Each structure stands twice: as structure tokens, then as C-alpha cells.
Image (cartoon, rainbow, N blue to C red; front, side, top):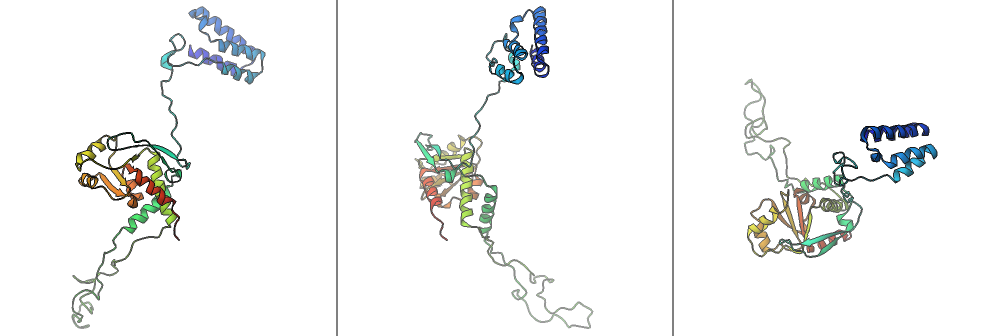
Length: 314
């Protein structure tokens, strides 16, 4: 049935109007005589061929296509075979990230209670994703946190005598003036590391932009949760363990509070290697990327937005 309809449409598009009419009549007669299903032939296909014989080419074809019947998987077997129809669910495309639009996100708590909604500033939580900026900020963080206390001793710092070990000539041995040289056991290290700073320079605008990009990425992925507060009734670790278990495909969680970390929260998370707690002032790009889920309190969000909106001191 489907192949006959396809042949009819192809012949209509490729041949002249007279041949389309002949093909339609022939197909209709053949179909009626062989199967007795004359009523099955679509009226749209017949009107399509007739319109080609009387009207002008593609304009009539498009007008007929607008009036064609729409078949769905719920249609009966007599209309169209259901196994030839697609059962794929059509989903709405995801929101585009980086449009600087304010985001509305629900607010909850550890007990999954509804605490209303909160508007996230678009210039902080919806900026374009810049991988190059994130890479620069992460390199800056990792380089700056190096202690740089490594040190080796030069030939003037190694303990030992300064006397010439043996005479210059006559013994057939190599010429040496000291036993503190790098070629001797316990001697000096040449061109070794000395205490220094590994920090590299990066502009404040770039550092601030890196944090915005990291927050926008977590918000766009749906891995940003906003809590009313991070208060816990007790200091038991099982409270945090049960909370993390409810999250699907989450291995590490970062909790960010506005001010000083609550005592119960600090005790409940100190034995969990996959849960870390930071104040809002300590939130950074590397910590955000290191955790799958970012949980922020309402106070922490307000403080971060205020910090991002503060003019940079030059």
C-alpha cells in the first residue's frame, strides 16, 4: 500500500499532468480490481493528480499537501500500518546557554521541602561558556597554590672541607680542587630548585569571568541547587549520606554557605570524602569543576552576585 502511494507521488512530481492523470486512473482501477479497496486510495492523491492536470505545477502541489491527512500512531489499522509509524517522543530543545537571561530556580532544603523560588542574575549565572577562560583560571589557581619551598644546596652550602684532596700532578688521577663538587657523594647539586613563587599573572576581570562561566555551566547542566539554608537538625553523618543517595549519578557534592559554616554541617561532612563545604568567599572555579553537584544557600547566592557586581579596584 505504501509503495503504491510513493510511486504515485513520484510520478506526479516527475511527469507531465496528462501522465499523472493516466497513472492515477490506472492505479485506482488496478487497486480496485485486485484488492477491492477502492475506498483506501487517498482522496488527496487523486485530487493531487487532477490538480496537476488543470492547475499550475508546484503551486497546486503545495496547496494539496496542506490539506493532506495527518496520521498518528493512534490511527486504526485500516488507515495506515502502525508498525510503519514512528513512536519517538518529540521533546522540546534545551535552553540555550549564554543569553544573559535571569533564571528562576526552585528553593528547597535537605528535607526536600518547597521554599519558593529565587531569581538568579543572568549576568552571573547565564554567561557564554568560555573553555579558554576556565583553563586560564584553573592554571592560575593550581600554580598559585604551589608552596615553592623546594630547595637544594649549592657547593658553598654543602658541609665539608675546602682543602684540595690531593696534589695536582704526579699521581695519575683526575684533577680536583674540592670534595664538595657535584660529582662526589654528598656533594652539591648544580642548577637545582630554590624557593620561589610559581604564581602567574592573570587579570581580575578574567578571574571573575571564569567564576561566572563555571556557575553558568552548572546552572545550564541542571546541577545547581539552591537551599533556603544549610541548617541540619543534628550533627549525624547519616543526614548528609541520605541526601547524597537521593541524587542520581552524583559522586561529589560541594556545599556553599553564605557566612561561617554551621557547626552541625561541619561535623556531619568531615568524615565524607565526597562532600566538601566552603563559605561563599572561598568559592572558586577549580572546586566547582571538581564536584558533580553544586549546592548553594540563598545567602551564598546573594553574596556571590554582590561580589560579581562590585567594581574592580585598579
